[in-house]
Length: 323
Image 1 (cartoon, one colour):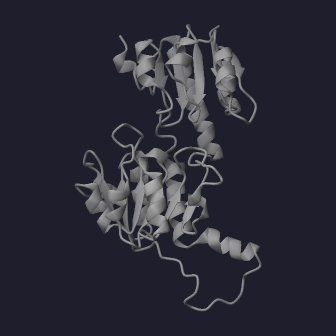
Image 2: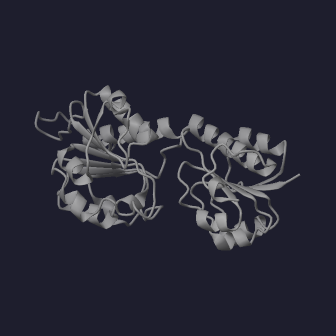
Image 3: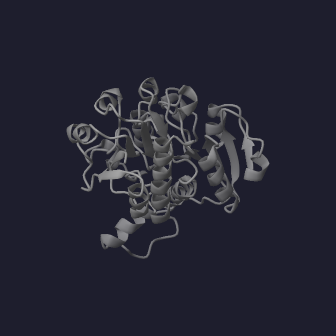
């Protein structure tokens, strides 16, 4: 039987599936595995079921001479050096699609939470500061009827657009390619990011991490936004220049931001961003629901087994580059 290593505690259904066809070694502690221990554990494996937060580079791959497949349990795969894997004939897969609904839900949750200042209001109750507030005190902002700008109109961006229709929002989007189904999504195409930023009340980012999208939103882009605008990021932290965002929030150049992703992760508790009252930061929980995590685990296991059996992998990201 082939041997596989599972880098985190995944859904038991995935382990059960793998165990029918492979010898499974799984890392069980809550803390992520150290690089040294990881290298030791994969020395004789044929496949790795890799949780998206962990990383694998060429040096790690060289420590596993029998390695044939890396199945990443995440839609993104910037944590894996795909080029190095391709050079070594290693197949890499991801888990797209299954993350769409929960990530879109969280993006909309962040829009509502930061607009209505829910974290601040919760603190008021906890701190015993609840009193009868005047009609012009601690005011939040409506989401319904506002203009939502979406950067990246893939599966998740389109799902956010569809949710926005229920809030009577005007939806603008920027994407590398114009979507033929934009009317169905209820969205209007904008030809460049600065125009989208200048017209939007809320901006939600949904692009993958790549060389082209690193610091896609920096000081210049933030200066295009309305002073009443809100930035939402549930994509990848490095898509936004975090230092520039901090300055924009501190100087009230924009109204607020809500982030599920940061650069780096985890964010230090001493980060000055966390001292601002116009930002919400979550610990990258876009897919942390029972159904989504279970489905991602199973999809990752199915990808891994297909690769080990020499069958077509449902979600291979580099098979077209392998001969």
